Amino acid sequence: MHRGRTFLDVTQGESDSEDDDAKSTQLANSTILRGVACLILCAAILFVIAPSHHIDAQKRLDSQDHHLSKIRNIEDDPRKRTRFFPARLQNLLAHSHVVGSHLKDVKEGKITVEEAIHAGGLHNDVGSSGHIGAGNLNANHKTAPMTYDEVVTVLQDFLKKLNSSNIKHKHATFHGIWSAYHDLILKYLYPFDRDYLRRMPNRREDGSIFLSVVTYRDEFCASTLGEAFAKAKNPHQLFVGLVQQNCDEAKCRSGVLEGGKMADVGPDPDCYEIFCSSAEGKKYCANNQVRLLKVKESESLGPYMARYFASKLWMGEQWYMQIDSHMTFILDWDHLSIDMLNQAPSKKPVISHYPPPHTADLAEKAKKNVPAPRLCGPIFATSDLESQIVRLEGSYNYDSVKLKKPRFAPFVAAGYLVAHSDLLKEVPFDPFLGYIFMGEEILMSARLWTSGYDIFSPTVSLTGHHYVRNHKPKFWESIHRTFSFGVHNPLQMLVLNRVKYQLGYPESARDMIKPKSLFSAIEQYSMGTSRPLDEYLRIVGLDMNTKEVRFTKWCETGTPPPGFEKYRGLYDT
Image (cartoon, rainbow, N blue to C red; front, top):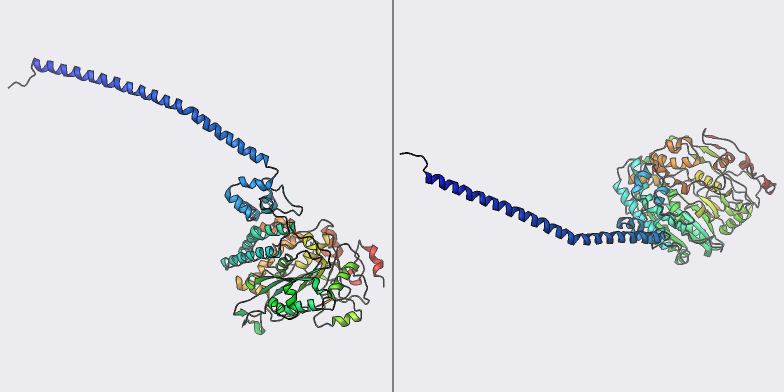
């Protein structure tokens, strides 16, 4: 059978092909028309929405201009300016966390605290005292003096944070302990301190005395308060700032006993409770004449920081007196203290020395006109643990005749000091000096002298001091229990670099010391500007470069120091 195509088959195939071409042409034309229609529709939509988009953009620009205009209009009112800050920054400012993201740079010494805080021109409202805390930057800015309750609330809150930090850093190295402490001070206590100094109450002119008493697990504290009030000529004018550092646990630890061991003991005597529940003390405590800050043993930062805390309990008293918590007093000690200050040939006198031991009969010495001992002899410590800091040797009775005018002296003692209370504002305690047990006396002496204060020894001994306290707890033992045994010595040596830098030790210059956080805010707590440090060191015979003490003679002989010869006639006998 033949399988070829017939004519009919061929014709039919051509007809089918022509139909297919026609359909393809129609499909192509339809696609083009639909594309044109889509383009027209898109153009129409763009035409409709374009004016609206332009209007919205213009509105946004107008809004931004209005926002910037509002900011420009309030540039002179820093209290309102913060309302435009991000919520996080507003929160930081509200809580005085003023260093913020610059903390790392401050710790590394790239910028100072002041530079970090003043960055961005946010300090137009800085107070006359140099305050740079958040209080100047928000609507809650306060100018009224801080109340006792305000101060104690802040300090108690800080101590709680310190306690938490100590637990967290239990096994830290001494560098880690310093870093944690520094950050806590910078974040909380430093802004408070600047705010307190800006808002300090006015000094009263009523003869009142503020007595700073700091106690560390001391059984003599209550008797010290008792004698202070009982033997004061004007006890109603006496106000005590008591910083009580105690172990309140059921099981505490003793000091180092015979054989180098310690033992479990009961809780420490509550100085405040004992005095305030006594027949004599009740009325003074009821009259709010004893202001208390309680500190746990584990929160103790050493005697210097305890005095820092006590200084914040001052509420405008005319005179400031600083003592230890194991003292005895002569009758009318308060009146005699003020009289000595008034007799001193200076506009800004400070009376200070190491008192005689508590066994001395102060009344008998006064009756026989026995002159008070004077603090003259400094030494550079030779122990590696003391980092060559200047230490003061004991007071001695250099004089044979008691004079009415107090004699000049080169140094102040931390355990007995009386002065005009403006000292607390002009030479404020440094919150960055935690953990030290030495160095505070030479630093305070230099800061006072360069701030225009003249130092004198008392004409008569007004207090006695319990010097020998063997086997009693010491604060560095608490540091070892809080962290690890042996950590206090290197920690103290580290912090002492801050003291030595201020005193001009060449090995503690900024470029020699790390971490740079040791210098945070140091300008706020350093030497005064009334007189140069070099002149003070020359007068008292100290050479920080060679670590040599030059005998100056004037202190021992009771004559005025170089530069004060015009007062020589006051001491002729």
